[in-house]
Structure formats: C-alpha cells, structure tokens
Image (cartoon, rainbow, N blue to C red; front, top):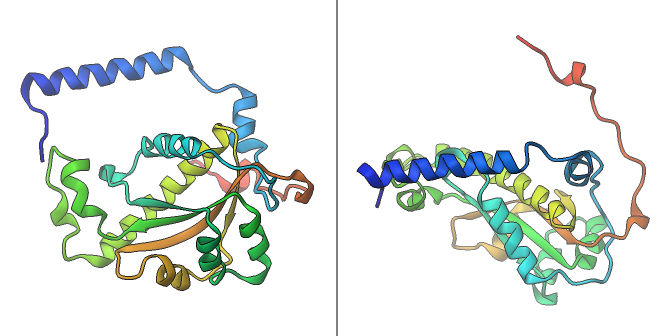
Length: 221
C-alpha cells in the first residue's frame, strides 16, 4: 500500500477536482443522438457482418470501462475475448443450440467474468486503507461483492462498446459450469454472461419489445 499523504494528497485532490470541473464545463450532458446510440435506441443484435474488430478498439473499450465506479474501487470484472476457432469451439460446448450460430458468427465473444479473489488486489486499487479484512475468510460476502460489481462493470463495457461504434448482443443461454470448467479451471474466476461484439447485420432484428413507463417502475417515498 502506497497512499498519498500530506501536501501530495492535497495536491492530488485539488487536481482531481479541477479535472472534473473541466469535464463538466466541456460537456454538460450528452446530446440526444449520443444517448440514442448508447441506450435509448440501441438494440441487442443477433447477426453480424464479416468485419473484424481491431484489438486497439477492444483496448479502448476496456480503458473506458475501467474508469467506471465500483465499491471500494474493487474492479472484480475480467473480460476474456474469444476470437479463435479453437476457443469458439470450446465456448460452443456451453451454449444452447439456438445460440451457437450467434456466437460463431460474431467477430468477438466476450466472457464476462469476475474474480472471487478480487480483494487481494485492494492494496493497489484502494491504497489509503487496508480493506482486505472485510473479505478475507468471508467467501459468501466476497462472491456477492464480486458478482454485483462485476455485473456493473459489464454494463459499463456494453455502453462503452456502443459509444465507440460497435454493436452488442448479450447472451445468457449457456452453462456457466461448462464455461468455468473449459476456461477457468483451477482459478478464482467465475463466468457471469456472454457478450457478442462486432458490427451488426440489422436484417435479423425484430420490433422493439415494450418497456415499463416511469409511473410503473418508479415511485417517490
């Protein structure tokens, strides 16, 4: 652990506060087309163009994702990019039949996972206080924290991918146990869900499904 103290800490805090002010000054809010792109009019996709995704773009998506907040900056999510024919054949073992073609045709499929031992990295990620005792010897608490924050990071990842021009198609029709056996045996990683990435073929889309209105899903107390 190497936390800043004294004048160095005050300087770092002042710089962070000024950086946020500059961001807000430069862009008070996204315009409607940007919001449409990442959420309002975005769609889950099922068919893909035969067009590769540059590795630099995947690195950019991760860099954006990594800056999203998590509790205690625990950052438990791990992203495994499945691209090769051999890796896709392994992943296909876990899929329900109707999902195999969706995955095989996607340029990249990401296994969204989380590390149950994320807390061992807290001295680096959260250096100003040792929070490891909150998790050491508490596997249930560690798993809940890893799953919750890993899922949160997965949502950041999907929004980031859309923001840089890719399309996404999340899948849950698979066996987590098979994925964990094939890709994470002997490790502390556990799969959450799969995400196809690429440039979509919109010809497979159907009409948008309903969403609850504000008054159904929200209330004031």
